[in-house]
Image (cartoon, rainbow, N blue to C red; front, side, top):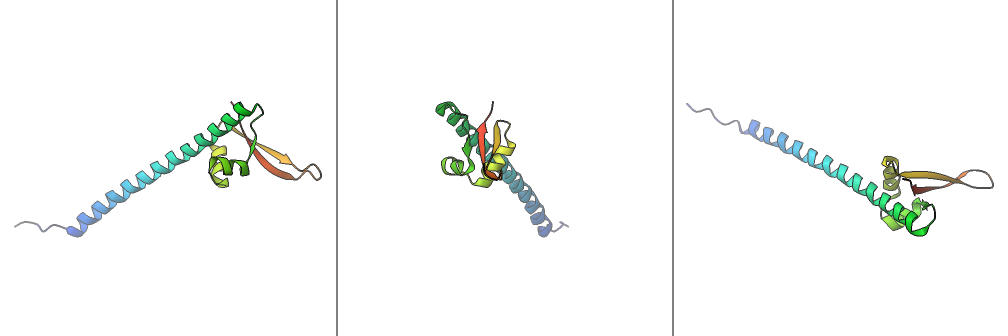
Length: 106
């Protein structure tokens, strides 16, 4: 006599496999997207440094407008990068922090 197919178990196994594949694809997409944002920020800062002849320091607000990333994405990319340095500017009157400038460093 043939054993009846355990449909519920089969569907559960397929769902577990699909869930794992979707999770893997999502994490892979996240890592690639994060690296793309970091490289885009590095390329912009390097081009600014090379073209303008100055240190290439740009404010986070400037980078939001020019690179098209949010402040959070810019700061996260700068912390992950070996080539982006952060410079804190202060108010001359009271010495309080005023702005964060990012620059490309070799």
